[in-house]
Each structure stands twice: as C-alpha cells, then as structure tokens.
Figure 1 (cartoon, helix red, strand yellow):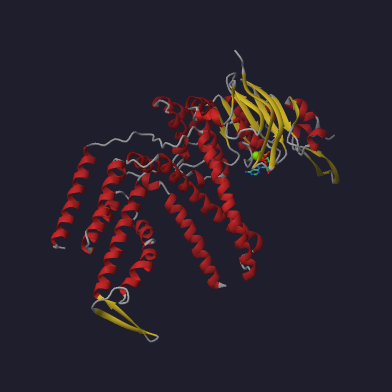
Figure 2 (cartoon, helix red, strand yellow):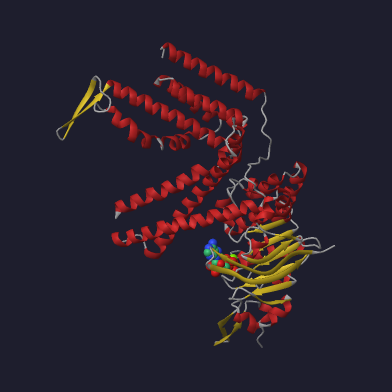
Length: 272
Length: 280
Ligand SMILES: Nc1ncnc2c1ncn2[C@@H]1O[C@H](COP(=O)(O)OP(=O)(O)OP(=O)(O)O)[C@@H](O)[C@H]1O
Ligand SMILES: [Mg+2]
C-alpha cells in the first residue's frame, strides 16, 4: 500500500493574483511522519497549511492527498469532502478565527456533529480530550472571553474531536508561556503514533526536536531551501541566522558586554 | 474634555454591552421553563403571540401579552434588569421615527388634548394621535420582548435549526449564521482599534486628526472584518461544515410542549375574540 499522504509538485499560489505566497513548493509527506515547516514571517507557512487542508488550491502545480488531486471539484464530491475533512484537521494560527461557537462545549461538539459520529463515540472522545488538555473548567465559557493560551487549547481540542489522522498546526506555541509550550510539545510527542501524521508550522526552536523528525525551511523567496533533521539544522547556526530563525544578541558576561549568536536554546549556549 | 469622556465612555460601554448581551449564551443554557421547551414549539407560539399583538388593535391586549412575556422571563430565570434593558434599548429608535411625529396634529388630525407653543409654532397633541402612539409603542415593546426572549432562551444552533424546520432555505440560514459571527467580529475590531488608537495617540485628539484616523479606520475596518470572516468560514469548512446546522440533541417534544402549545393557542384565540367584540 502506498503510504504517501500529501504530494506537492511545483505548487505556486498568490493571493488575488497579486501577492505571491508560495513560489514552487515540492513536498512529499508519508503516513506517520512528523514534519515541521519553518520560515520567517510572510514566508508562506500558513498558506501552505491551508492548502494541505484543502481550503486553498494551487494556481499552478498540483497537490495530491490520499492519491487524489485536490481542487474545488474534488470537494464538490460529498463523499470525498467528508472523508478528507474527517481525516485532516487544521489548528489555525489565530484561535479567534477558529472559535465560532457560543460556548466551548459546543465548539468541541461542532466537528463530530457535522460528521454525524455516533453519540457514544462522541461522548468518549469528549471525555478523553477534555482530560488530555485539561479544559474541564472552561466548558461553559464563551470561547472569545478566554486567554490566548486557553483559546489555543480549546482550538486544539476542537480539532482533535474529529479524530483526525493528519493534524496540521499553525504556530501552536505562539503566545504561550514557556511552560505551556513545553506541555503542548510533550502532549504532541505523546499523541503521535505510527498512524498519526503531524505537520507543524513554527519558528519555535525550543520544541522542534520533540515535535518533528523532518524539517522543511522556506526562505524569503517562498521556496523550500532545506529539508533535514532537527539535529542537523540546529547545528547550522549560520543558516538559521540567515533565515531569521535566530538573531545576534547583545549579552553581558561577567561585566563584559559582547555580541554573539543566540538562539535562546540553553543547551547550545556554552561559555567557559 | 469631561463631556468628551462621557460620550466616550457611553460609546465603549454601549459596544461592550451589545457584545455581551447579544452574544451571551448563559441564559440559553440555564435551567428554566422556556429553556426546557422544544425550540420548534416555542418559536411557533412566540410568533403566534406577536401576530396576536399586531392583529388585535388594542393597547390593553398588548399589555396583557407583555405581562405574559415578563412572567415567562421570570419563570426562565432571566434577570429582570437585564431583560428590560435589553428590550427597551430598541424602543426609542422605533418610537422616535414613527410614534412621536404621529402624536401631533399635522400627522394625526383629531381632537386636541394638549397644546404647546414652541417658537410661534403650535404643537397640538390629539387624542387619536396619543392613543395611536400608545398602541404603537405597546406593540413594539411586546413584539421586541418576545423576539428577545426567544433568542436568549434558545441556543444559537437550535434557533438556526428551527428556521430550517420552518422551511427557510439553507443558504439563507447559513448566511444568517455567518452574519451573527460577523457582527461579533466587527464589534470586537471596533473595540480593539479604539484601544490601539488610544494607546498610540492618547485620548485627546485634535478634531482634524481624530477625523483623519476615523476615516482611515472605517476603510480598514471593512477590509479586516471581511478577511477575518472569510477565514472563519474556512475554519468551519475545515471541520466539516456543509451549511446545515447540526445539534447535539435531537429536537423532541413531550406532553409539556403540547400543553404549552394548547395553552398559547387558547390565549391568542381568546384575546383576538375579545378584541373583535370590542370588550377591551
Ligand atoms: N488574505 C491575504 N491577502 C493577500 N495577501 C496575503 C493574504 N494572506 C497572506 N498574504 C501574503 O502571503 C504571504 C504569505 O503569508 P502567510 O500568512 O502564509 O505567511 P506565514 O509564513 O504564515 O507568516 P507568519 O509567520 O507571519 O504567520 C505574505 O507575503 C502575505 O503578505
Ligand atoms: Mg502564519
């Protein structure tokens, strides 16, 4: 059996035909892989994830999912629409956009109800996911009135509720405090198994080792310029700096200020 | 400066009040009489009451229905202050445009009961004008109150579902659902933009500068809310939305619902008959 989930060939996309967002992306993602997409602001990460979720379609080039080409026509087929939407879940970059129900509880139930999952199945998924993300206390609240971190958890929970095999996350740790980011990374590491594919767009170097086996880096020209393991990438500080993923930093050591490269990763930061 | 602050405070207050009250869902999930009714039957009987209030050309009947409405609100655990504030907020708008001019003799000729002289112009309030205005206001109050009561005691998706049951086309219901979300986003953007401007330029803007910023804002406001709304739609699609509202519980009606339906029909029929005979 073919394990390829997504195959992108020379995908180009621009908004309104004027603002280029993806300029020739080639990718192949197989089942069970954990992928991180990195790149500076405006490099097209969100656009790419929305395309993988079948919400945007290439201007030129092709995107295939489960062996079928994705385009508007494919999604008019209700059978395929249902299959694809229940298999692939996207956590949007902005939780405000994603949360549109009056209460957190309804938010969680929205997806499963659309797919008409069985009541008992919904019930047990609900209990598990509420427990996993520890959002029991938020269930009756209005999503808009929550803090950024709480919203993020609810957004993630609402996507997990459709029990997707492929989870796309758009900067899941942005705006979260270090401990919550860490918890989220641990959660994703635990959640992953050979049947779950997790694709994360991020520029958080702290978590990529836990959440990804393969990293794609998109540069300012909105093309993939590198594909490699997290370890290999984190070693290459010159490359990271060039792509806005780390920055030089003024530091003070024993009263002596000096400038050095700094990526906020304590274990890559030795001074004797 | 002081006055400016007052206006500012009332405006921001109004926006957050609107946001909280239109979008609050707490009453819909509370336990109470109306919340326990089948939304279909509840919606039907409320429409019936509103129609009765409009057909019966009598302020007394409107007031009877209005009392019924308040009693139902009480039975459903709704805070009276909140409910009155929320309904009466609409009244001045309607009244100002229709009822007040109708009070006066130029619009409604008849027997004078009160005359006032303002800057050489004679304003005469006529008896016909006054009773017309009273009738009008009582109708508006009653109709608005029932609509508000229905919307705060019914969950958002249930309300949309009821529209579908009543045969409203799917595309219309879907648009309505989107509008609801859109208004919320819109209010929120106004609020945030206001805060952002305030933090950047402080509260005391010169008139010209203020005007400039407001004009700039209006155009970016539409754009931003448009994009946001589009993205909300994508987020709904992503989770399997096809335009049909789905509920966690099936709509079902029991003995209680039917009893309520019979009661409501009887009340409406009685009131309409009484109005027809001219007893009230
Ligand atoms: N709705 C839109 N209309 C026009 N241009 C857009 C729109 N959304 C994104 N773009 C443009 O497309 C490009 C890619 O945007 P995208 O949001 O995919 O970047 P990103 O990598 O997710 O950035 P960030 O790290 O800031 O989230 C940017 O240059 C952006 O200006
Ligand atoms: Mg982005």
